[in-house]
Image 1 (cartoon, rainbow, N blue to C red):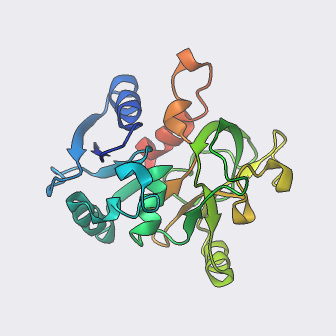
Image 2: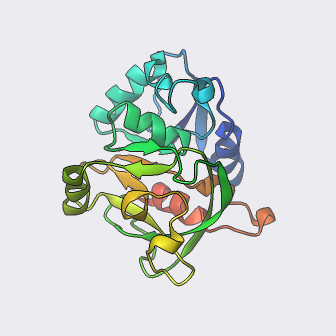
Length: 229
């Protein structure tokens, strides 16, 4: 499987993702520039974290007009895999590939810390091998990570088993105290109805190297490699 990592002006997690996929996991990949109009035959596109175009208008709102996004949207609509992490998740919602929106954190502050995640659905390639009874420690780093959607959209996400992760405490309890940013239903990650586009605010690529003393994020990448080939 061939991965494509998209770099936008302001991306700052693209090299982290390249390191995990290429250096740690030994996978073939290409670095895609935001002005490219060719995905170069990749099977799996990753939109990394960062501050695309400085987030000057609204996070992800300008990046969705980048030339590469026309190809990413076409790829997704044909069933190709796309993962957006943090700013990448914001770009996916702005582009209409995922439901909802990511708003300013309810405390109006940038949050950078480890959080606990509970797997809500294992009915997707990136969560199929994860343990729904386990708690995964993954870092977040965002100022606009509060997932918001209409009641009808939230019901649809639940009815179609599209909620991948929710913020929880270290015992796996999903509650207000474990919600770092005010996301509705404590949502930390979702997928589309066809389960080929995925978005999450936490950064699994920052929890994948033993040198960081946390490899919980590797479970997500290993599930991708097992079920997206």
